[in-house]
Image 1 (cartoon, rainbow, N blue to C red):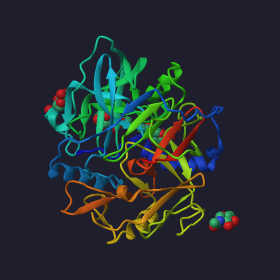
Image 2: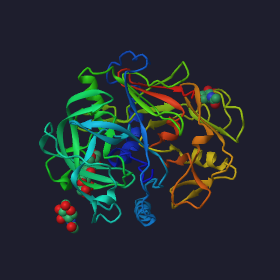
Image 3: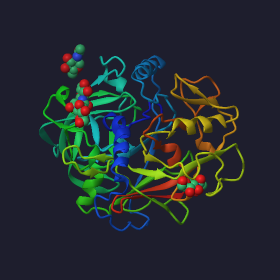
Length: 446
Ligand SMILES: *[C@@H]1O[C@H](CO)[C@@H](O)[C@H](O)[C@H]1NC(C)=O
Ligand SMILES: *[C@@H]1O[C@H](CO)[C@@H](O)[C@H](O)[C@H]1NC(C)=O
Ligand SMILES: *[C@@H]1O[C@H](CO)[C@@H](O)[C@H](O)[C@H]1NC(C)=O
Ligand SMILES: *[C@@H]1O[C@H](CO)[C@@H](O)[C@H](O)[C@H]1NC(C)=O
């Protein structure tokens, strides 16, 4: 991708506060609170509703633009990652009405939106109006006959990488992986500060209703983060309309292996027979009702393990570092984030084991080393099973780096939140079993 890529789609409203939420959740032991009687897991059978995923690869943005964005981020002291990586945005086809569009697949947010054909593009670094082409969307949406606008509501979202969107809400026929959803609430964007990839026209948000970001009224300037309107995102609607079993799955491939998303089952890719199972966790309390609610796909990992390059994969039980068995922490599974974002001490230690060692590059907001570097072993432990990250996923090409330099797959998540992004997802079949309130992971075998 370029392009322009969208690397860190976590929405500000929740990412920024999720740390205190997590602390709160610990204090009142929400981790063990089960808000809904979890149902039985949906069998991990091959689904008939599979969507092929594509890596967008649009044209690159100017360095000046990216630099401007980065300096803005530095001043806000977020750990935003703005590197322009190649081929890192995952997209799917989605139909609004009878027209098909390409949209970013994001398990870290909940709204599904497309840019309207007359949208205003805004430069995220200056907030000035710029020409539409600068937002680099694919084909944009014209209101279809089946679209019904919702009066007196507006869509307003900011992502941690500096992008933001304003628009309005409506109901539309939405179809994805041959599943036809009636009356789906969607957002239509009429103002966008966006770093597009030249291919995708919007985004498909697959997280829980607790993360929807629509607001009462038509003036975005009066929106109060504490009063979002909760509605059913597309996956919730699919299950409410009994179109699929309450589970979806994602398998991201590399250059020569397929990337797929499946609903109600798993995609047809080779994987280990058994799945590691980990309960989904609650990070937040519904601000209006005071009840615990799911937001992101968050689990607790048992720890991570790393060592200098060896041929032998790390197995569970052979802990080789201080973050072994007893260093559990929470991570969210996020297809809209490129990297594995870890606590600082882990990111530093792993990056120090590249040969030559990877060094934090302020311009990139990421660790950088030679593309030919020897890669350390790195594994994430989930439910007493070690998921090793393939060395091919640990070095990523990016525009704007000196020749021969690469960004590493493990980045510094500071004080959190932490994520298992695409670098991790390429190594597994990830099952998001909402009905059973759990995540399952099998190792990918192709
Ligand atoms: C930017 O564009 C919006 C929407 O087209 C318009 O309402 C606004 O006046 C423009 N702002 C400037 C400063 O031109
Ligand atoms: C809503 O959008 C406006 C205009 O982009 C922005 O200034 C404001 O911060 C946004 N509010 C929320 C709650 O996202
Ligand atoms: C939202 O709620 C928090 C916690 O109650 C409060 O500190 C904050 O000021 C509120 N924000 C707005 C914009 O009302
Ligand atoms: C983990 O912590 C528990 C309780 O503090 C301790 O009994 C156990 O030995 C620790 N395990 C490891 C592998 O350090």
